[in-house]
Image (cartoon, rainbow over all chains, first blue to last red; front, side, top):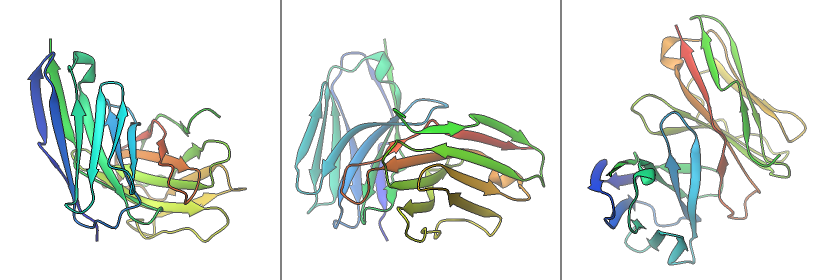
Length: 111
Length: 114
């Protein structure tokens, strides 16, 4: 059974800092790994999807990497802004029919 | 539509009543999923529909929960005889199918059982 863990659970940084969010998974036989953002009281917004054959994906100030052999993914946020404050979730897709989510990292970027 | 649409966005119901939650997936997406997010908990898989195949109901927490998908499009999640522990945000997602294109989530229905 896939288990996904995210560290840290919460993070507070001053505006402008670069930061890394970590995600680890126990079963490396994944189809893909997806990073989501969730604002309070809202649904999930997809940020980046990394296919199992890929090593990383980039979108603007976001870069996500995937290392299947070690069961790890990282989300790098460059030059953080207060608007980046949200909960970030990673999810592993093992069989194309169900995502297993981590517990999330609650990020606060202070002006 | 342009995104996954869920209704209602908020629902308050009395304990013991039945509720229906609706999900309208992205047009053309063959796969549809229901997840639940309880306060302070992670996202919990409930049920998965793929095309005309029998749904994967392995995540439904009890027989009070059921879901159907009509015409391969709109889905309804029904909770019978609601309990306070059913209070949560119910999220629906759709994807193009098994071909690895990721999931698009709706904004969710916040259910409160009083």
